[in-house]
Length: 246
Image (cartoon, rainbow, N blue to C red; front, side):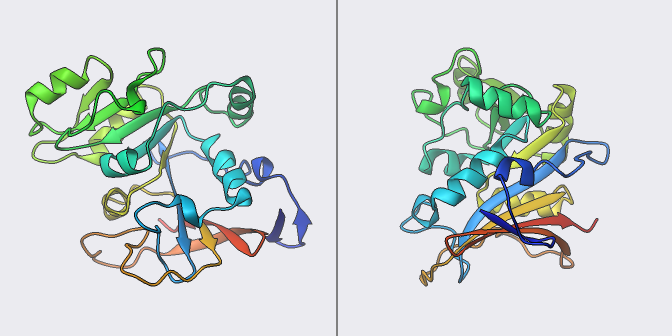
């Protein structure tokens, strides 16, 4: 894999490429967003993002996942992509400690309805229970059921308040949070001014169709400007890294 921005072009290990940023959030955890899209902007093929990836994309995905204390994901994405407990291998722990993160990440699923299957792979770890972030309007019986296998966080009234949720994660000691989507969750974070860094893997494919974009929801009052700070490339893929111009 090569880094072509900033110059000069050099061969680089993705782990080192993503550890150079000083990630200190403005009074809250630093929030990153990581997505993959085709060249024409599609984020999935037949409902899943996996077909867009490559070996290099997996390397970048692993490097980025070594950075956050908490991996934030919407309930639909968690279900479609079959999320499970984060890796607890010795090598993963070492990578994460070198990056200054918790030895093992925690997955936090955002859901207003709590229509999650407690028998799914997400809930199989007893030592690293997932976090479920929900609202006061969620069904109390579902909260009680999921609390047997997860740590439930109530943040917000009729819907999840992501600012309040980040405050709770900060109280737990989280310094960095990575959103892996979906687009509706990303849109809420962007609209709330809560995103600090964006990672975008650009796949050399044209998919057409009516797939969603990496951020999709209610329109913003003004565009959010990004600063391109790094470009990696391998096998015609581009791995773009932006800072949000707060």
